[in-house]
Image (cartoon, each protein chain N blue to C red):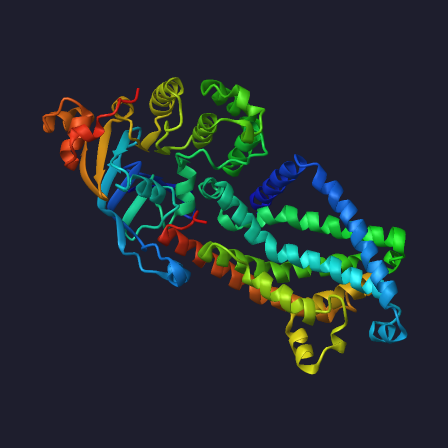
Length: 271
Length: 291
C-alpha cells in the first residue's frame, strides 16, 4: 500500500518537474482564467432578467451559476481525459514499454500519470473562482469547503471509471475518447452547465437525470454557492458514489482485458 | 524447477518455499503469431482479428545462469519477438517462457523483478528531464532507494562515459548517448537476466567496444548475470556469446558455441556458418564487417 502510494508520488514528481521546465503556460493560464471569468461576468450582465433569476436556485446570480458550471466542466474534462492522454503520451514518446518492464503495474502507471493533471485542473479552477471573487463579486464566502472537497473527490472517483474505460479504448483502437466525447457532448446540453435542466423539454430532462454530470454540478453548486453541508448533498453524493462503485471495477476489468489483448496482437506500442 | 522448503518453526506453520531455478531462461515449444495488418474499414476490427501470421515456431531454448546467448537471424527472423515475450510485453500463442523459474505470462510481475531490458531504440526517455532525473525515475520504479541511486548512477555513468549527459536534458543528447543511457537503465537495478535487442546499434565503434568490455567484465563475469541478446554484429557475437541461437523465419535452426557452429559447417567464419545454415549466399553479406 505504502509502496503503491510512493510509486504514485513518483509520477506526480515527474510531471511536476517536466511542467516546471515550461514556464510560460502557467502565466498564460492565469491570464486566460481572468478573461474567462470576465467573459462570464459580462455575459451574465447582458442576459440578466427577472425570468432568468426565477429559473435559478434561490439567491444565485447567473454569473456565479455559469462560472461554477464552466469551471467544474474543466474538472470533468480532466477526469475523463487524463488517463488516456497519459497513456497516449507514454506511447508516443516511447516511454510506455520502458515503464511496462519496471516493477510497477500499468494501472499504477496510468493512475500516477493522471495525478498531476487533476491537481493542475484543481489549481486552475481555484484561479478562475479567485478572479471571480476578487474582481466580479463571486460569493466565495458562502462556500462550505468540506462539502466542496467531498464533491470533488466523489466526482473524481465517479468519472475516473469513464476515464479508464477511455484508456482501454485507446489501447485497442489507438485513437479517440468515446466516453469523453459522449459525456461532454450530452452534458453540454443535458447536464446543467450553463442553464438549469428544468428549462429543458421533458425527454431531455430524463436524459439529464440519467447523467452523473447533473448530480455532480448540483452538488457542487449547493456546496459552493449555498454553503450546503455534506448531509444536505448526501443524495447527489450517493448517486455519484454508486456510479463509481459500478464503473471503477468495470473499467479496471476492461483495461486489463485490453492490455492482455494488445500483448496478444503485438500492438501495445502501435499508434 | 527445484523447490527447497525451509521449516522455520517446529510447528511447521511458517514455511518458506525458496525457488531455486534450474535455468535462468527456459523456453519450451514457444510459438507466436500476429494478426495480419488490416486496412480500411476492417482495421476497426484489428484488435479482435485472429493471429495467423507466424513469427516464432516451436522454439525451445535454455540459458544457464551466467551464460551469454546471442540471437542471430535476418530481419524478421523472430529475435525481437522472442525478447519481447521474455520482457512480458507480448503473450505467446503457444508454449511457455520462464525467467528464473517464473512464467512470463502467469508471473509477469515476478519476471520483471528479474530482468533488465533494452529495446534497441533511442526512445523511451522524458525529453525535458535530465539524464540523471530519467535514470532516477526508472530506478525508483524498480524500487531502488534514492541513496543507492545517488551512488550507483554516477558510478555507472563514469563507466559508460555519460557523466556529461547526467545534467543535460535528454532532448539535447545524441541518439548514441541516449542509447547508452538506455543500456545503463537496463543494468541499473542489477538484474539477474539481461535482455538486449541490438545493444550497440547506434553506438560509435569505440563506445560499442567499451560497452562490450564492460558487459563481459562487470556484468557477465563479476555479477554472474545471464544475457540473451540479439545482434547483427558478428564480431560482437563472437566476443560476448557462449552460444549462438540462429533463428530463420521464426524457427530455431541451430544452437551451439560459435566454434562448434563454424567447425560443424566447415566454415572459416561465423558469417559463413550463418549463411550456410540459412541458405543465403555469403556474398549477400559482403559489406564491410563492423568492428
